[in-house]
Image (cartoon, rainbow, N blue to C red; front, side):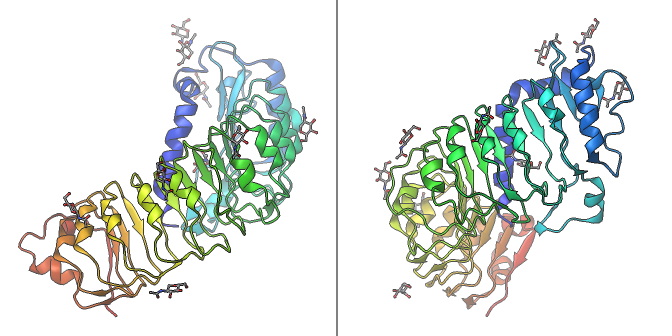
Length: 407
Ligand SMILES: *[C@@H]1O[C@H](CO)[C@@H](O)[C@H](O)[C@H]1NC(C)=O
Ligand SMILES: *[C@@H]1O[C@H](CO)[C@@H](O)[C@H](O)[C@H]1NC(C)=O
Ligand SMILES: *[C@@H]1O[C@H](CO)[C@@H](O)[C@H](O)[C@H]1NC(C)=O
Ligand SMILES: *[C@@H]1O[C@H](CO)[C@@H](O)[C@H](O)[C@H]1NC(C)=O
Ligand SMILES: *[C@@H]1O[C@H](CO)[C@@H](O)[C@H](O)[C@H]1NC(C)=O
Ligand SMILES: *[C@@H]1O[C@H](CO)[C@@H](O)[C@H](O)[C@H]1NC(C)=O
Ligand SMILES: *[C@@H]1O[C@H](CO)[C@@H](O)[C@H](O)[C@H]1NC(C)=O
Ligand SMILES: *[C@@H]1O[C@H](CO)[C@@H](O)[C@H](O)[C@H]1NC(C)=O
Ligand SMILES: CC(=O)N[C@H]1CO[C@H](CO)[C@@H](O)[C@@H]1O
């Protein structure tokens, strides 16, 4: 989805903050320390069980110092393995998930040997972009209790998320975002133990049976990011006392909420910078409560049934960089107020009932890179504005993508 980019940037930033100390090791480490024999053996067993068609683990075993093997990061004082950075170096995301041939060549398959448990100091495990063929996430991962960062996104697991993961009480980051939708959870009771969790991404995990999802996430005091896109969630509580007051990213897109209205507790999340409610069934007018979220940099309401005019308070959201109101029933005209949204880089108003002319003042949106105004009932073309304007200025210079079909 077009929208996920900035969110990813923030996630990486947070992940770096969390891993600051270990991040430095990546640069300075591994030259002088040598690896522990037990851990070396554990890694060799791990390698044995992984199918590695492109030889990414070729350096594993070619010398005694496993701290020097690719993807292995040791503590520079003790020599203990603290990180396994084994994610696919290629990116599967081409808008949606279609693995390319090159990507598939780089992924690991096979299985994860329980010898992983011999890495008693492992804090960081990243196996993202593997293909474990729909097997369950191994229960024994729940016993690697030193883990702070676990990224199994797009790793090809299936079946029940093992509740044993609830034993990973040191986790700051849990990313099980899969694209196959083969992973599910019966409930999220196990999650309630992960009190240090800052980033939770269970997108595309089938949570249709986990009716406790809200109740549980609301008990996690440290959460900064919640990504529950495409989780087949059915109901959002209307009233709630929200605990996650430091939440900055909330992604509840692509669910099938029965709620016609955005629930009020969302408007109390004052520190939100990113809200994604796209691909849901919200309707009526844009609720006034949204005014409270004026720090938003990212707002995605694409593909809902909002049918009011665009409210003028929205033009006070001067931090907005991404605004998608596309595929709703917004009516009325496109206001001059848009000129106030000077941080906008992406604007999508397409496929609504908007009428009238695109105001000249749009030409002064200097940061705008993408604008989509197709499927509207407009009387004047944006290109006319660009030509008529004496100083077509920044808009013309910077636009990377302009989609405008009058109709
Ligand atoms: C280990 O790494 C840390 C972080 O980079 C650094 O501050 C420390 O000096 C290093 N220790 C040794 C012995 O290299
Ligand atoms: C490795 O050891 C050498 C010599 O003992 C020392 O000069 C160097 O700073 C050490 N490097 C690191 C990264 O600790
Ligand atoms: C997991 O890994 C993917 C790929 O590197 C990355 O895009 C994503 O941000 C990671 N998740 C977290 C929470 O760091
Ligand atoms: C881990 O979690 C499971 C299931 O929640 C539990 O039965 C077990 O006692 C926990 N502790 C350890 C150390 O595995
Ligand atoms: C907020 O979190 C605390 C501690 O995690 C918990 O005891 C409390 O029940 C939570 N409040 C709600 C409304 O869930
Ligand atoms: C907007 O939608 C609501 C609910 O679907 C409906 O009751 C209302 O009449 C609609 N308003 C407009 C202006 O279309
Ligand atoms: C807006 O935020 C204020 C301050 O946090 C809060 O008191 C108020 O209830 C919020 N408004 C809505 C509609 O949630
Ligand atoms: C746009 O900003 C100007 C100056 O900051 C302000 O006076 C005006 O009311 C704003 N317009 C809207 C529609 O919010
Ligand atoms: C994978 C890896 O880091 N290999 C390094 C091991 O150490 C030798 C010599 O210091 C380097 O040349 C390799 O690149």
